[in-house]
Image (tube, rainbow over the protein chains, first blue to last red):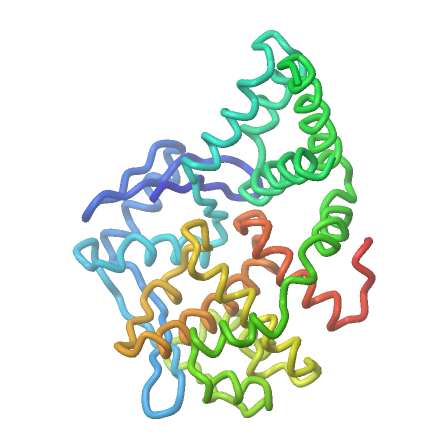
Amino acid sequence: MKFVLSKNKINLGTLSFDDVMYHFIGNNDTQIFLANAVRAGIEIFYEDFFDGTYTMKSETIDSSDPRFSLGLVDFLRRNNFSVQEIRPEIESEFHEIISQLPSDSPLRQSAESQWKSFSYLEKTQLLDLIQRDTLFS
Amino acid sequence: MNSAFQNNDLAQSILTALTFLDDKNAVAKLRAKFSAHEQKKFDLTSVAELKKMFGEHYIEDVRSQKKSAPHFVDDETGSPVSHEFAHRADWNSKNDLEPLERLELLFNIAQRVQTADRYKSIFVESCSAVDAQINLRLRCQEYFAEITRAYFLASEELHMRDFIIIDHMRRSTFGLPEEN
């Protein structure tokens, strides 16, 4: 899993995970914030369903816990970071569509440049709109 | 059809889509456009499908609005209250939904929670009931709560299909038109 991290609409970098490690490439302060948080242990919240009731519980986990990656993502969201997933198939779908236009087309250049600044919501909207327009026109 | 013609068509579609998103009312327009195409997907076949996914008893409980188990926040946690509030608006708890609307909402969420591009959250991904139907029910409840929370706090993180589900529900709750 790979995510774009931002705060107050400022892009801070990308966060990715392998088995027991997180990798962050980007802003220095965020790097330090993450390192301190992981060192202290990540507090996670989850719902426990037992005996007919749901109870929200909390627990502190370290990077060896299988819930670590999403726990860290959840922790960042609680700390007012925007955490948007990067989905390779969406990126490829866009590049496949756009590559059908000549490389010197101003529209292609403009679309490629706007794409980089789009949120996950906008990216999925754009692809849906293009697909819909192509299907229904 | 020659490729130049296809490219022109595609260019027009891309341009239309970009102009659309550039408009400050893009989301509102999109919502209207999307609703018109997507709205009529839920029917009796979908109800049968829901019964297969969740078990007949649960679907009958949802239809007849028999309340599910209550949610509590552990005294020592307290923090993510927005998630807990969101449970109050789901198919089990939202009093003003008609029986079929409750089932449709559950149906839409069940579709989304099983896709690869679903919203990733520890609340959903950590559901681990042994019974597959109960597990799906728990995942759907948590998924709904999480995308509702995200809708209000960080909608840019959502896939547009999740955004549309919650936005449509919010508009019907408050009697807001779909167009603005």
